[in-house]
Each structure stands twice: as structure tokens, then as C-alpha cells.
Image (spheres, helix red, strand yellow):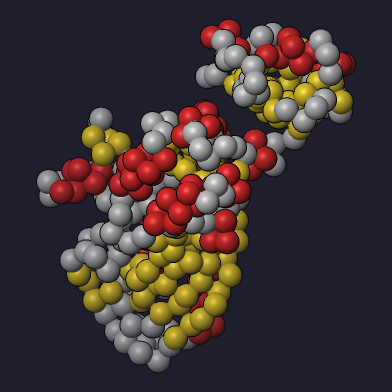
Length: 322
């Protein structure tokens, strides 16, 4: 990437989102600094939450939906013995109880019991739509509606610290989870399993799209990186972040056909795709050609998102995105 031209800024830039900013605020600020219109983020963070917010810049915006599907990791503090209408400390207290009877072993067992597939009811402060209106909009109007449970996955939980012997015991832990998981609701549900009110006291996102704190820059650092010509070193290729999707290589003429959005025979690819689903396709020189879907039984690879290399024109027929 050449930092001298804003039009050449392309890839995924991990931002450490500050408290008090919405995810939209970060995108808007980045657009102004980078002078690039095509920017999107890979998963909303509440204004009070800090942490990793990957921004897809330029053509990388075409892969937001796939990066959003990747697991996310959070650090949170759960406080027992108190509940609020927003499930965090920013809300109005709705219930309070003495939870000093909780032991470290009981808390630990309850928290770890949530690892796996669980059902969550989205909180009223979420962006989930009901009858065309987002829940947080209804909450601002003082309206509460029934929400259907959603299945999410808690991949792992690592407990760091448990503070007991007080009216409001606390536990600090990290959780790796699927898209759509509400950590505030997880905290409330853990408390409910122990028979006490509970609330999320703090939250930091430490992983998104495979990127962590070490990959992040602040908004304030971007102008200096641009001036020094080193911003390119902080941008990541979207295709390389999708490392969980298998890859295959096309020689000629298959690579040329791929860029035209044509269906390919898997027999001409190395390795030959042997499982159904998405595959990353590369040219023999290493150029990324896009995402294709394999139909092993039919022996074909069909275009899903074609990604012409920067030295080749992008034509309408080259993208069969869905």
C-alpha cells in the first residue's frame, strides 16, 4: 500500500475504541482522517465499552459479513447482588440483595456451566429489531416487548479473579463466544442460576476478526502513521484474516475464468476442494481471487465474491456476491 494516495488505502485496520464513542463515531472519524468513504466495522461496541474494533477499509468492506461471523473475546467483571434495567452499571437499579453467602466454588461452577451452546434473550438495550424497530429505541420510549431466545455459543471461559465475602461479590473472567452473544445478558443469567440479581460491571473486547490489542492503533495515531508512510504496515488483508476458510490455488486458464465469475472444475485446482462450503481461491502467483463455494459432489467451484487483484479492472460480471 502506498500511503501517499488515500485511494490506495485498503485492508483491515484494527482500532482501539475509546470509551464514550459509538462504533459509528469511530467509522466517521476514520473516514475523515483516511479520506476514504468505503469503511465499515465488523461488530458494534456500546459507547461505554472499549476494545478491538476492526475497520474494513476500501474493497475490504466486501468481507465485513464474513469477518463478523468469527468468534469474539471479551474481558468482563460480573457483580452479584444488584440488577439494573440495562444489565450494566449505567442503568437504573431495579433489584438489590445480599449475595455474601456465595462461595468461590459455587460462583466458579456456575460461570463455567455456561460453556457450550446456550439460549439468550436479547436485552432491551440491544440493536435487535422487533416489528421493524430496534429494541434500544423502544427502551428509550419506556416500552418493553417480548423477545425470542437466540442460540449462541460460549466457546470458552477463563476465570481470573473472584472476590467473595462482601454484599456484592465480583468475578472477573474472559469469554470467547460466537457472534450475537450479549455479555451483559450472560452475566444476568449467571446470577439467575445462583438465585441472585447480577449485573455486568465492566467490559473490554480483546479479540475480533482474529485481531487483538497488539494489532490495534488509536485514532490519534493514524495521522502520524500516514505521514511516516507506515500505515500500510498496520493494515491486514481481509483474506488472510479468514484463515479458518480453506484455500486452494488456480493455474491458468482457471484463474482467468475465476475473475470472470465462471464456474470452475475442482479438478484443475490444487489442492482439490474436497469439502462443501466456502474456499479462498488464489492465483499461482499468490494473488487473492475471491471466495468461492465448493460443491464436491458436482465437482465444481462457484463464485461467491470475486476479488480482482489491484492491477486488474473490476467488472460487473466478476462479482456474484449474495
